[in-house]
Length: 79
Figure (spheres, rainbow, N blue to C red):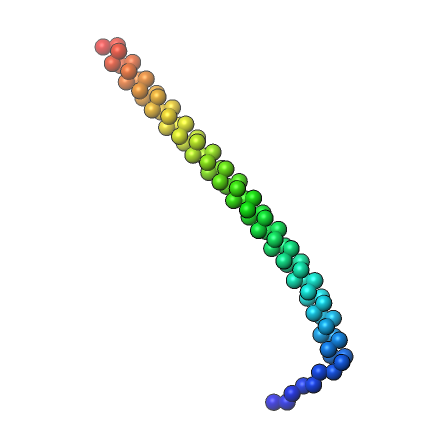
């Protein structure tokens, strides 16, 4: 296996390519930060939705219990 020697021209070309790659890395890092922030916001929204859904379920059960109690009390009082 032969060892390739790097010339100044090859090193300059490599440096130019790395500069372009560095720009892409910075863009990707910014995109990842944006995605993390969006994920946090969606987590907050999901939590609020979940809590609101639980409130609706509790309200529904409360209304059903009230209706049942009213029906039972009405039936007992009529006797």
